Length: 294
Image (cartoon, rainbow, N blue to C red; front, side, top):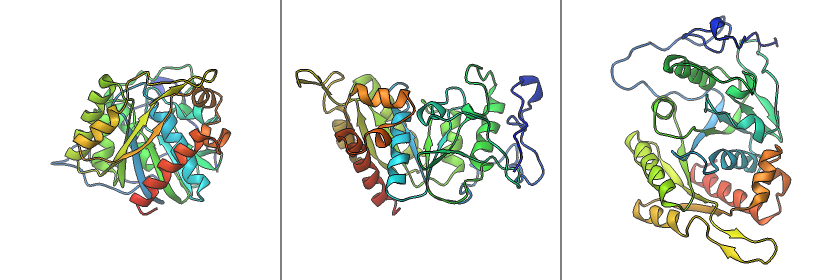
């Protein structure tokens, strides 16, 4: 096991090797140009892979992705989460992890672990205050390295936390990785649902099974008086599921404690596993597990 040698200086990086990984023992490079779609590949030593997507920022997708990974771990599965957002990684904060990954004997990145979940993120490879000012070629190559040059050491399930949108990153993952399914997260608000529908169309176009939708921030219950308010509207995700023949996997309430748990790096499934909020995450994970034969 060796210490990582990555320099965060952009001058030290190249399009072919943006993470600065040693080339000895690395898997063969994919051809730069290919006719037609690339052949889908498995992620080494990972049995099941699901993608968590929203196509819209700010709807709590990363928080849900991490809590699902933790819920799988609580059910006894070997679980991991891969942060595929190169520009705005959230996993280090959510899992309260810092530090640069080491390299295995095969020159693969060794994931960082907390709460029984393995994780990898661009946030471990650059200073948290340093912006990643990269063009598309470097971003795509870095993504390929994160997908194929991490030594997971045997996982039952890997959760991919996708960035917002339906662009290069999402297409690279859906066209090159064998996904067992996708979970789409949205709030009940119409403006979020319009982007969620774009995500549904993208996954169907690339033949990725849609496992269902999660309605986040569904209802706010006042901790003082107990009155419930649908701040972002009600039943919006349920209507979208019905119109697109998709299962509604569950509802996550709008609760300040979920946000507080995430900000302090101890997500709800770890901080309050027996709460109604924790039970909601566990229930969604159970449904997904049955759907993908986990």
